[in-house]
Length: 330
Length: 291
Image (cartoon, one colour):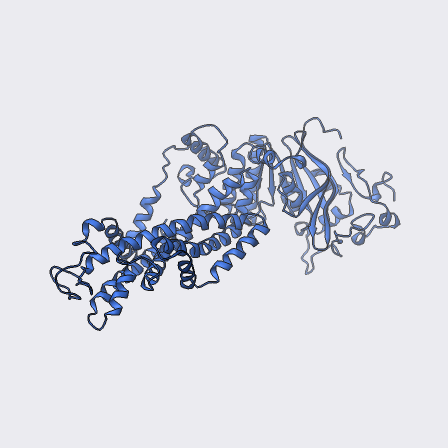
């Protein structure tokens, strides 16, 4: 890895299991993720591929039946998976912040915006007036008109887009090094989505924090992110800069995913393209390549040997597919 | 970038609530009734025209007159003085009982709702066991064990009320526990105590206080009921229940003692119910119309 020097977040060979009545479900297996300081990493994949699990595990927020089965999450060189609840509380909200999918439920309905924004600054120095000023400033920065007066408003008085702005303001109020955005635009309509993406990009440039942006919308990832990691069934199948991955997708899953993006379809059609087949059973993970039952290029080797990360087109572009084994052949 | 003004001032919550209440006639009526009852209870020794236990030389079971506004009972005691003194006992029972039941119920409910599953199951089992007895039967059993007294009444009503509050708090807490803003709060590094105190409690407290306000008549009726059965306040101390019981024994001679004993129970019930309903509408910001 060449980018180790200025790496902020480095996930190494991370595996996460969920306890289920049928046995351990291997939700993440050997995931690698590198996020340098101040860069935006997109995390894409279909529902259930482990994007959100990965995002939540970065802040140590696994559900009670979740367990880190192996690997490490290094944040500034410290392993999040080995932290006590107390140490985790220390990094959450200071070095790591989160924005959630549904802005309608991410705010306390019975407390004013101001009260909630003052409350999350409880660890900071300064009096109430100072904190209030900071809160109003932040609201103003995320584009809420008449910010100082809005501190007295309740969440239900805002629209969805405004609430997501409030959530972003709250997440950035503590000046984190890393912002985890778990599908922050999924619950919003398309025009708002563009606004929120632009806002995130502006704020990211202004504050210089790194962002892990989870989405299943390829367009927003291409728009916002510097790098992208494609996940499938709990594994990282491809990683690289947005340009490399979107222009020269190396993994058959990424290629299929891009072909299925409705935004790319030019001709009117009654049938949208899909990837045939379903996700494999993650309780009994089959050997070999995880994507092989749905892959049109699969051959014998894919059934027996799990593909490592092969180098693809760009310098940091890797993909887990045997097709890449010998430069351009197979 | 627009200038951020520092002139932001949080409107006094109390003033907002008072304004809302003023626009609700039933709520105002309830408030007035409640205030009258509470004031009477507090200032009972000064308001009562006679000693409630003093036996007069005047008529027994007399009809209301200029000297005795509510008449006199079978021993010739002034009924108005007895009703006022009984109100003091009723309010004492209500405050002590609800205070104890609310605080214990709140704590147990938060623990059951936010704590581990096994603890929740144990607490629920205890709540259900306590609730499975009818209050009066449970009261009779406790009285049989420790003897009748004011404190027995308070104990019985408090113990039987705790599960009601605890269950409500538990359900609300569980609903909130999965809410995204609690997760967001955890993602911001808040401790369990902080989450419970700052975020769960205010969400739970509103419904709980309203419920408590509506439960005041229930508590007072239970106290009156136990006293009526001779299991509560010891005679000659006046309770609305004992006044009723005395009147009931002599109802063929005079209706006035029964009326004097039951009217305050009706007034208290109406007052607290109206007030409780008005508060329910006000406390829930989601129902607020004009803000």
